[in-house]
Image (cartoon, rainbow, N blue to C red; front, side, top):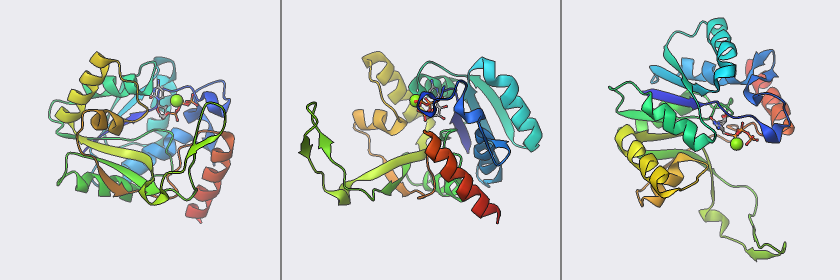
Length: 227
Ligand code: CTP
Ligand code: MG
């Protein structure tokens, strides 16, 4: 399995002056925890890490310090996540039939989640990890009033990994680019193309580290795991 890790963001909501993926949790950069999980997956054989060129030295240090043993490539990212993934897809080795996309910011995903998503791609060509939501979700109008309360049983919170047949995902990205679609995950491009996307059970702990409180929670979870 080939894995692309978008890691080219800036972390505005973290309030950090540099890429939030370089902030440390328990002495390791956040991105190192993500890469460590990929290293421990049995299914993943190649990893493309998509970043901004100014971060490449630090990304290389992370790989060296972990003694990363799988094939990998550092790939120049773009201005948006969508553009970063697009560029990652262009850099995949020509033998890549399937690809997992996993946000660098989801540093708590387990190797088992990568493996389950990889295995599920044997029987479908598009999937995402997701979990049911715990909160009651409201749709709110521009004036700040509730417009609607969707039935919670139908609501799932999207996570990554998201896995696809490479040809299919490239096709949807090309179409999105041509038609000016702006999306925050890859599955949304397939939805717009009316292609079915399967749900794989995600992990409650698979948070996307977005704001400072997420960092504190991640630190707690990782230290529990380390015993
Ligand atoms: N990402 C990327 N290229 C971009 C923007 C984001 O590869 N131009 C990556 C981020 O590095 C992250 C993932 O996409 O791993 C999810 O994005 P998000 O959590 O929104 O990270 P940032 O964009 O860095 O954060 P913010 O939106 O708060 O600025
Ligand atoms: Mg962002």
